[in-house]
Amino acid sequence: MIQISDLTKIYRMGTVEVRALDGVTLDIAKGEFVGIMGASGSGKTTLLHMLGLLDDPTKGKINIEGTDVLALSDYEKTMFRLYKLGYVFQDYALVPDLTVMENVSLPAMLRKDRSEEQIRKDSDFVLERIGLLDRCDHLPRELSGGQQQRVSIARAIVNKPDILFADEPCANLDTENSRMVLDLFHDINEEMKQTIVMVSHEDWHKEYFHRIVRLKDGKVVSDGTNPSAH
Amino acid sequence: MGKKELRVAFLLALRSLQRGSRSSVILTILIIGMCFTNMIFLPGLFNGIGQSITKQVVDYEIGNVLVSPKSGERYISDMDATLDLINGMPGVERATPHFSKGATLTYRKRVLGATVRAIRPNDEKLISPLYTKMVAGSYLGDADTGEVIIGKPLAGDASVKEKDEFQASLGGVRVGDSITMDYGNGYVKDYRVKGIFYTGWYQSDTAVYVSYTDMALADPRAADNAEYITVKIKPGYSEKFVKDELQQYGVSEKVQTTADLLEKSMGRALQSFAIINMVSLIVGIIITTVVLFIVITIKTINSRRQIGILKAIGVDKEVIMHNYGFQVVIMSVLGILFGLVLTLLMAAYLAAHPIVTPEWSATLYLTPWDLVQNSLILFAASLVAGYVPAYQVSREDIQSAMRA
Ligand SMILES: Nc1ncnc2c1ncn2[C@@H]1O[C@H](COP(=O)(O)OP(=O)(O)OP(=O)(O)O)[C@@H](O)[C@H]1O
Ligand SMILES: [Mg+2]
Image (cartoon, rainbow over all chains, first blue to last red; front, top):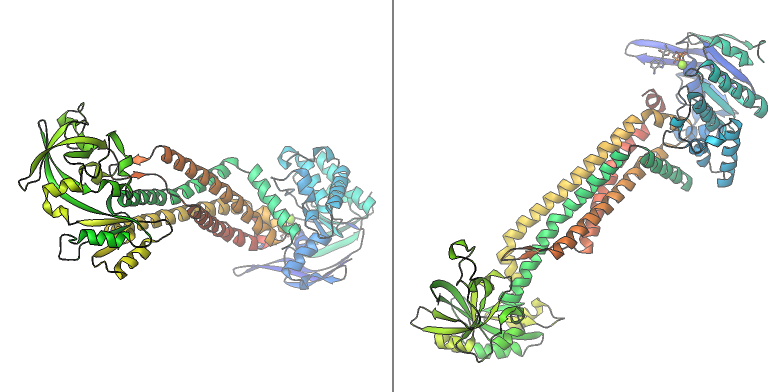
């Protein structure tokens, strides 16, 4: 489903070159729950940004579901993100002036293939799924961090994306809330066969991942199925 | 840009205004409203003053068309022939002669110089509302001799002491009193005050009116001479038409319309008005533009990361630009509406309590077109002010926006 080959990203600051990614080659299959792990500065976020079409690599190829995504125009990339990708950020990144329901429906409202009724049904469904349907008229600031992160997951999956990306979604949460969020990821991966690529540097998260890709200095240092996953 | 995108942009805009900083939204709307009022108030007031002066000049001085002696001459000598000629022309309601002379007025212990204006009282009724402005006694008749009507400020008020008077007067002349007028040519006569009027037009209110018949006694030239002739036109005719007609069909005197005369006498004042109007227009536009520009710029700077996130989840940059665009549209529409209400309230207030001076009384003179035009100008300025920062921030690449 995702084929990445020789992905390289070089940041140039004056005369200094930082190789944030250095020839990463990976295949991710449909339905996988992949954890990208590694020390701080190893290139995890950079990799996720490349896959999420938020930035262009210096070199290499990314193919998602048969599309050479790097060849797309700016507008096409935006539409690709809207129709095919979901993204969860470390800081939830909800629109503060929209209610929970409005935040979740927002990506669906922009799709040409969604009727008003469908949008409501889908939004209700994902809010129910994350257990916050009763808070749908609340503003994000009226929710706890964990609840906000669950809303942001609901927003990311409301359009049933092909791939869901998450960059350290638990970094701002305590262990209990982290578990809740991770369980949610686990469940939607199981129930909806949702492909998930998640970045984490917390060692204990790895019990959730089917497969773990370890990065070090922008290179893949290990990649394999995780026997301890549950 | 489809309907769905515009709807999302509008939702984002509306929610941001509803749930964002209320006070900044309200302040912005107030400022736009004030700018609108400021843009329209001074020009409207000047227009009101201009209208008021024009009306007074038409009513009490020159009618619609003024016929005055050829250059080099003091009087229109073939007065009756000229009057007949003018009165016979299509479009002319009435033409009537005027003759004025200085005189020294004596009433009890007061002595005062004033202008004595000779009119044909009945003809004058067709030209000037003077006969409706009597505050005491009655208007002149054509054959009246030995009787005058005088302006209220000239007649004065017996309860005000001479040293406290704002302008010199005869100190409280009443109807039926007698005043002595000395024309300086040896003709001195006592007149009975038949009526007292108050027009609000300084030139008239400080004058004494006598009938033409009476004036002919004081100055024989008034028997068949006119100092000038005022012409009132019939509804549906233009001043210009009547002027051209008069000139074409044998009136050899100087013929000028009100517009000609006002342009000459008030041209300079009108120019200054135009400059002041322009300044208040430009200041209004600049303040509105700057305020909206700052408000939107601050908004966009504060939400750079948020904008990056929205783009990351698939919201197109056009939606983001129109989000801020709509916010400006909503605020400027509300601001302009507020300004309209404020302006109309002031117009209503001034209509009820005009600013009155001896020369004019000012109300706000606003045409619907003035209101529409200023609204559109201000609206266009706000669009530019809002869309410039909105356009800029919507083009920023996701990486730098998200790192903000
Ligand atoms: N915009 C940038 N300009 C310059 N260097 C950058 C930029 N973004 C990332 N880097 C560098 O690229 C390298 C990889 O950064 P990245 O953010 O991908 O690391 P990470 O694995 O996500 O780290 P963390 O766990 O701290 O989030 C780092 O050395 C970082 O300094
Ligand atoms: Mg990172």
